[in-house]
Length: 340
Image (cartoon, rainbow, N blue to C red):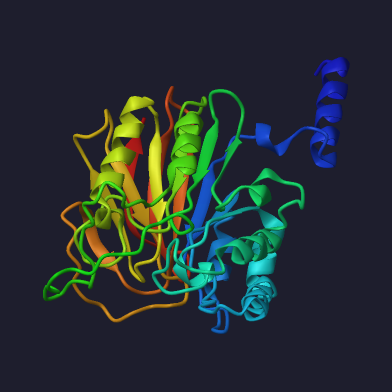
């Protein structure tokens, strides 16, 4: 090999190891994600996550069960979670991204009405190690976006806040058998994201990317089970889908949590490509098997402890993504594929 080339490669390797060359230029190949972790319960699932060697891990909400208006107690629960050995190991091995859901926001099924949202936001950002002068600390809500990878292999993470601005839920007039207590709110004033976040989202979707991962704590595609879902706010959901079309957003996959069961949902006929919503829940909050309505489900629900994985193949002109639900040991139990 040419001596000059050897020296150049050696210099490149040294710069990469020293951090002089940004890790953002390295293409991502594996993304892991999950939700619903009781901070006081054992968390053996981190062994399976670490063994999968993800480049990025996305916490999708209910990362702790705070459920308090006492901010000292809420901070203590975040500190307990941060000290979990398996989580600490994962955090040292890969990039961590996160959103919140109701229990780590502070109150079950809460939205804009939660009185401690301003204080809770700062505690959440403290947990993430967000710089004190960051825009994310100065803007109401915890929404954010990050793009990782070189041109042609850019992955854009869009981290939504479905709590801070969300209108209080509406109870169904009559609870149907096998369904949750909530029904659709058809009011023009009913919101999930709030106008500031909507404007930010449109601007963000117009930025160049080759694959877009949208993290929503609650499901977008599954709408009719009566628990928390974008389906409780049908006009907001329609606005979201129309915005994807309006901005011609390419390569979108949605990640969601919350349900204490895992599934892959597929919406066809709305975008030029099928829109997948991969729900990974729960990491240590399993529930008894049951039925839940979802006409968009691919395969079956999975009820034991689980996490999600995206495996990205960049060998074609567009990314090919394998979506997986993995069990507590890291074994694949549900899967689907999409090519963009």
